[in-house]
Length: 240
Image 1 (tube, helix red, strand yellow):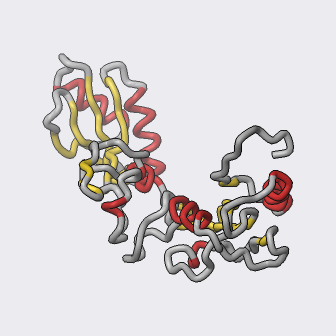
Image 2: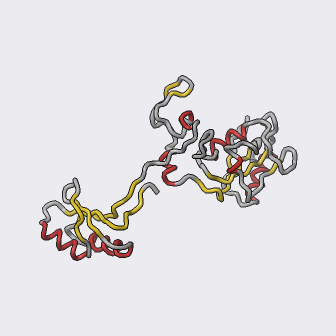
Image 3: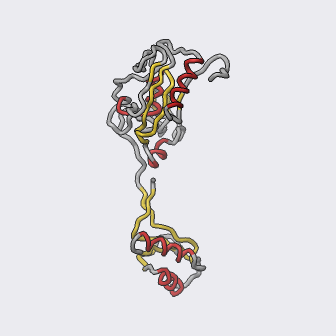
């Protein structure tokens, strides 16, 4: 996460008006020692021992009537930003108001990917099926993230090589899971993920409702719980 507890300190804020003697008595009762004042009224840092001692000290401090709040002294880190050279063009992930193809962006008009990356950047064991036109297997930003645990399928040519002959599936897969922080290309929303290509669209980008539904079934039968299908038609399909 963005913040983790520092094991050697707590932060305590006392109610305004407490005397130094009252504060000292509260700290002594919790088994902690003062470690420095803060630029926050009635707050100070206190030193504790290991994690077990810290938890007990927190409970003891929070139970004191003169303590307004007590919490771990949290450690914050800079948000994660990948080193992919095309990231400045990906305004949908990280919009700082930059110019993209002559159009000035609006800072903050994005999905908040940077804040999300601070919490996690993905897991190669988590599978996502891309039910589309396939994925280019040799794409250097995608090949490392194509699942080896769950092989994809081509339901157009009826083989095990879901090569993209249209380009749409490769584009979608890149938005979803291009390898991030690899110094190349773009960054996906997930830098590490198990992409499962399921080809249901032909070289013109078209596919029947029966084939698309079969693609969903293929993913489901293999335990894939998340499917991306960026598809559309002129009417709704009960089968799909």
